[in-house]
Image (cartoon, rainbow over all chains, first blue to last red; front, top):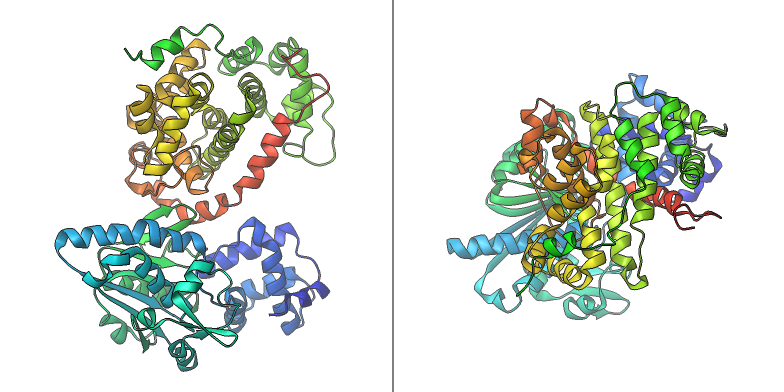
Length: 286
Length: 300
C-alpha cells in the first residue's frame, strides 16, 4: 500500500485519533496504541481519498452516524488489517509459542502418553504462518521428532492463497525476519527465491475452509494450538461469538488460541483464560 | 556460619535516609486539617527540594497549557495535593537511592523503570475501578520494590546472583532471593519502611505486594500487585520478566473481587495494549525527576 498518499490529506488531531481508535476497537476488537497514530492516519488517509472526504473528523461522523456506512466499515477493516504475512511475524507471539506453549503442551502429552500434536493455522493465507509453526515445532522437538506425530492444518478461503502456500516458494521480503541459521536449515535457495524444506512442508495439510461455515468448522477437533490472526475482524459480533465458541470446542483441554497481536476477545468470549506472555496475549482452554 | 542478610542490614549504619521534609509531607497528607499553606511551608523548609518540586510542576510531564507555575502555593493548587505528594516522594526517594556505582546502572535503570511503570499502571487501574486511592497508589507503586534496591546496594553479589537465577530459571525474584540471601525484597523493604516511618499503607504494600490477601491495606496491596503484573507484561520489570501469568488466577484479582470491585468488567486486553506504550511516559517521568539542576538538593 502506498502510505505516502496520505501526506496530501489533512492531519489527524489527537482527539480524532482517540475517537477513531475507540470506534475501531469497539467494532473490531483491534486496538491502535498511541504509537500507531501515524499508521492509522496513513491507512485511513486512503479511505478519505476514496470517499472524497476532506478530513478525519468528517470520516468519523460518516462511520458513526451514516446508516449506509456498513460498506465503508468493511473497507476500513480491510485497510487497517492489510498487513502482508511473513515468516516469524509478531515475534513475541512466536516466542510465547516456542518458549511457553509448546513445552507445556509437550510435557503434558508426554505425561499422558499421547504422542500427537495437532496445530491449526486458521486463515493461513499464503502459508508463512503454518510453515513458521512447523519450523518452530521441529526446532523444539529436535531429536525427539521421530517419536511424535505432528499435523498442522492450514486453512484459508482463498484458493489462490492456498495454491501459493502449496508451492511453498517465497521471496526475500517474506523471509525478512527469518534468522540466518533458520534460513540455512529450513529453506532451499531456488534462484532468487527460497523453498521450504520438504520435512516441514509435509507437516502442513492445506485445506479450503470458509470459517463462516459453522458445519464445516464443527468437524475440526482435537487441536493443541490454534493461530487465528486478524481473521475475526471480518465477522459481525454474533458470528464472532459463534465462531470463537467453536474455536474453543476445537481445542483440547490445555490448548491455546492466539489471535492478532492487537486483537481482543473482550466481550466476545469468557470461556478462555487470558494468559499474559512477555509482550503477547494468549487464550487458554483449561 | 551464614548470617541472615536481614540481620546484617539491621546493623548497617549508613542506610539511606529519606529527607525529613518528605516524611513530613507524607504524614501531613493524611491529616484531616491539612492546608495548602501548611504543605507549602513544610516543603519550603528544604529549599533545594522546593526548587525541584517547582521545576517538576513546570516540566513536560506535569505542565498543562502555557501557564507557568511560579510558586509552590500555585503548584499545589494547580496539580493538587496528591500530585505534590507524589512529586516530593519520588524526588526524595530518587535522590536517596541514586546509583552509587557505575557498573550497577543497568539493574538500577530497570528498577526505576519498573517502579514508575507500576505507579502509572496502578493509577490507571485505580481510575478504571473507581477505587479513589487519591494518588497514594502512585507512591505505593513507586516504592513497592524498594527492598530490591537495598539488597542491590549492600549485597550486590548475592542480589545479582538471585536476579540472574530468576531470569535463567523463570522463577520469581522473591523465591531466588530467599534461596540466595535468606530473605527477600519484601522483608528488606518492610524493614526500611519502618525505619523511615513510612505511612502504614506503604509498609503494608511493600511487605504484601505478592500476597495481597495477607495485607491490612488489602485494596491497595491488591491494586499494586495487579499493576506489578501488568508492568511485567509490558516488559518493564526488574527480574523475572520472562514469566507468563493468568491475571484472573492471582491473589490480587480475588481480593479486588471480594472487596466488591467490578474487576470482571475490566477490559484487560485493552489495558494491556494501552500499557504497551507506557515506556514513553515512564522515560519522560524519570528524565524529569533525574534531570540534574545547577544546585542538586541534598548533595551540597
